[in-house]
Image 1 (cartoon, rainbow, N blue to C red):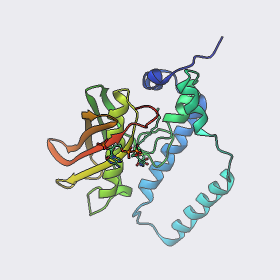
Image 2 (cartoon, rainbow, N blue to C red):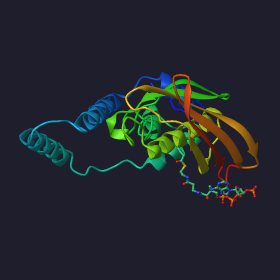
Image 3 (spheres, helix red, strand yellow):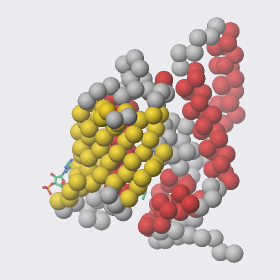
Length: 221
Ligand SMILES: CCCCCCCCCCCC(=O)SCCNC(=O)CCNC(=O)[C@H](O)C(C)(C)COP(=O)(O)OP(=O)(O)OC[C@H]1O[C@@H](n2cnc3c(N)ncnc32)[C@H](O)[C@@H]1OP(=O)(O)O
């Protein structure tokens, strides 16, 4: 049987509906364990001997992994634009995303509840490792997440671009260790410039407002 292949407009649907490739099932398990560990180790109140034991165990895992060869992600990108990307290629493009990729251990994991031309909405929970002021998410982490959420609104509308400018207004503290909601939508376009706005909410309270300009590459605009 010939392997199914995908182009740019099938990317998001295939990524959310096709079975997860076997190696990504394992990569996701590794990433989940690493994320859980990061959260639990921060501020853990344990004695010196326990810390020594953990340090040695983790150093042994790092030594086992070594410095493996890495796949060139540009190749998967090129295949996508000719409609020749396999599901494995799509996972290599999407699953290492630093904000919502399941196979990236530093990605906080946004659960997308809505994605379409009219905008996107996702939920997430940020642990201790993302704390800035006590009990609140670090402002830089908020900027990082909103950059990804506003970019997602661009992709959900089948457009491509890079962040040119991102302005953020912090309206109230955003809590760690609780569910928060992020939203974004395209508000306008002038030539290659696409205007996008977004927000973060804790329940009914808006804690952050963001607006920015994304630039479609000259080659596509
Ligand atoms: C498929 C799935 C894969 C999956 C891939 C997943 C990707 C996720 C991406 C997440 C988002 C990112 O992190 S993106 C990474 C962070 N961003 C970057 O690295 C971008 C770095 N900056 C650049 O490359 C460049 O400066 C650009 C592309 C932004 C602009 O360069 P340019 O295209 O040459 O722009 P230029 O011709 O001078 O100007 C065109 C018009 O835009 C305006 N303009 C120019 N720069 C800016 C700017 N920074 N902010 C606002 N507006 C600007 C000008 O005033 C002008 O307006 P007028 O006179 O026409 O009115």
